[in-house]
Length: 246
Ligand code: ADP
Image (tube, rainbow, N blue to C red):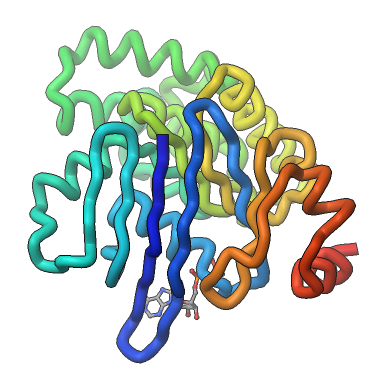
């Protein structure tokens, strides 16, 4: 479902991604862990071309973008790649002047030109799925952080993405609200959604990930099953990082 090949990203002189390659099979959940500044968010943002890689290629489903010949990647191709993915951010980025229902309907109606009645029905069903059937007409300010993030997940799902990308979705939440968001993410994983998740929630990684990737200084240092990576890390850098978490 996802093939990333030799991805590089530079911000001026700063070489943030230094040749990242990764394959994710359909229906699998990959969790990316690593120290702050190691390039996790940048990798995720390159996956849907929110950042344009300096070199390398990204394929999601049928859409492949080769950034080696930069300048030849046109806007229509970037839009096609982006439509393959749904992204959930640390800050929920909901439209404050729209209700939960309107937030979830907005993309399908304005971007995908879906019929408003069917978009509404789908939005109701998605908000019900994330446990917010009784909050359809609430505005973001009337919702807790956990509820807002669940609206964010429903909104991303409303665009029918092939892949869901999560960038530290629970980092901004009060501890007691983290669980309700992780539960929705786990349900999504069990339904077979292909997911790439940047998170510090190691219990979630152990429980839900098919594969855990440890990144440091712009490279994938090692990857493996949660069992391998957490209990038998091969690399010293991974060991040190995991020790710091204990
Ligand atoms: P992580 O998610 O692992 O904490 P990031 O991908 O956010 O790491 O950042 C990796 C490095 O890239 C950091 O040094 C960060 O300051 C830098 N960086 C990220 N985005 C930008 C940007 N838009 N412009 C310049 N530097 C950036």
